[in-house]
Structure formats: structure tokens, C-alpha cells
Image (cartoon, rainbow, N blue to C red; front, side, top):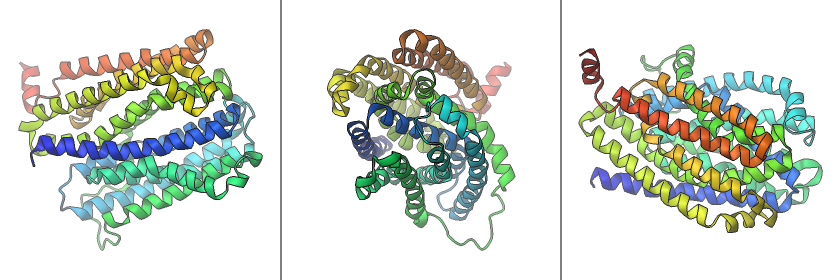
Length: 432
């Protein structure tokens, strides 16, 4: 089978797997919005934003380092891959313990400023338990992505948490709404999902290593190597979710429910983008390292594929925005204007995907980090100004402004740095 056909086929399977995750997550959120009052749904959605965000901070870019090292290693070097994954588990646990302690200390502030005392302090503190298990799930997903078990990786990252939550809600349905038990069930579902991800990854690495390979870095070295990669993950997350957090801070949990629902619908396009990411990035990385002559053709092919798929999804979602929102509950149609703005913002963000990969591959992440920092600053400033004037629509406009800056800045820097040209040739031209 030709490389083009393989790319399309793997992308199709990834999209199908991602779509399963989309369906499960939508089912979960529809259940939440139809069962809970809007402020209650807002509390849960805000918690579902905080836990992934704080968990991400605790991983210090480790998932990016994991996929970079494992995907670029030789397929037969199983011992190296296994040792790297096991060290990743240990480092993730250490960092998660530290972050959990910080969570416990800052819980009263979060309760007051973001949740407006609509969540009990004990429930909020118990949520810190789930940080490690969410990170464990993410590490396993990225490892499977790196070894090209794309479908399983996508299902673990997107379908598994929702599946576990739906299952536990079904088992404890009678207690679901009593005294905010839905929060406790959510925390329990993340613990179960983390353990399940480990079991699903169990067969893809060596459980017993008689001797660690010499080229496997120790924990401190891994931490130092992952730090420069961390901002890519941090700022990508906050570009997606900072608006929800700031709507919670400046408005209330009822508005969070509306805006978060619109944001979630707009992220359907990013689910497709994530499926393409799972397929394209490991292959792009491998081609850049092993078959550099094919890099330019593959890059542009992948870029056009991303733009075509995301443009099609964006137009379709915009056309059916009102019916889609009404599925959650009729009152959620009030978020339609925010949804239309967010769909355009996510498309602009998607256009820079393959360009961003090349910054990592060429080890010029500092340029990407600078752009991401500036985009995030623009996003925060825009939110502070626009939410006060336009409410949750202002948050959507802030996302559009920041994503537009991000996309155009990444592309301009990409061409200026000549990232498609092999480094030796590029350096020679710069010296001339």
C-alpha cells in the first residue's frame, strides 16, 4: 500500500475512533444538561476543566517528551521504549503528589473565586485525588500514539473517561443528584479510567527489564528535557479552556454551563484534528528523521488534508448549530452566537497544526513557545476587556482574536525559519 493510501486509511480509522469518543462525551454532557440545573452543570463543567488543566501542569511536558523519544526510536528497540515509559510513570507520580498538595492548599480560593461556593470544600479537595489518574491515562495514550497504536490511543484519551463516567452514573443513578454526588462519581470515574488505561497498555511494553538500557535518561534528566516542551501543551490547553475559566471568574456557573456547551460543540472540529494529529505527527517525525527527502511532499499533503477536513466540519457544524444546541436543552440555544464565533476560531487554530509540528521536530520550540505565550496573553487581556462588555460572547471573540494571531504568527515564523529545509542546508544559507 502506498504512503498516501496508508495516511488516508489511518486518518479515517483515527477519525472513526475519535468520533466514538465524541459521541460518548456528547452523550455524557447531554445527560448532565438535561438532568442537572444549569448552575449544577456549570459546577461540573468547571471541575472538568480544572482537573485536566492542573493535571497537565503537573506533567511538565512529559507526554510531549515521551512521544518525541519513543516515536523516533527504532521499532525493535522495545527495551528502550519500555524503560522510558516506566520512568515516565515514576516522574508523573512524583509531580502529581506535589500538585495534589498545592490543590488542597488552594481549594478554598478556587471555591470562592471560580465556583462561587456552589461546590462543597470537601468535594473540591477530594477532586485532587484524580490528578494522578488523569495524568496516568494521558501518559498511556501518548505512549500508544508513539508506537502507532493510534486507534487504541484515541479511544483511551477520548472515549475511556466518558465511558467510565457513564457506567458509574448508571450504576449509582439513584444517588446521582443527591448532595452533589455527581461530583464524587466524576472523581471515581477518573480513578477507574486511569487504572483501565494501564491495563490496556499492559501488553505493549516489557513488564520486567533485567537491565535498563544505557541510553535511557534518569528522572532528573527527563524532567530537564521535558520542561522546554511543556509550554506547547500548557498554552495549547489554556488557549482552549481559559475562556471557560474566566467566564466562571467574571460571571457565574450558569453562564459557564452555556459557554462551556458552546465551546464543547466547537471542539468537535478539534476532535477530528486530534485524530489527524495522532496519525500525522508520528509519521512526520519518523520521515524527518529517517527519510528526509520525502518530508516536503508529506508535509504539504498532510497540511492540505487537515485544512480540507476541518473546513468541511466547520461549515457543517455552523449550518446545524441551533439544532445541535437544542439537543442539550432548549435554553442552551442562547449560546448559538458564541458557538458560531468559536467554530471560526477553532478552524483558524487548526490551520497551524502541521506547521507547529515542525518547530518541535527541528528543535526550535522556543519560537513556538514565544508565539503561544503572546497568544495566551492576548487571549487573557481580550477576555478581561470583552467579557465585561459582551458577556460570554466576549469570551468567544477573545478566542477568535488569539487563535487568529496564533495561526498567522506560526506560519510566518515557519517560512522565515525555513523549517522544511534540512538543518544543514538551512544553516549554510543563513551564513551566506
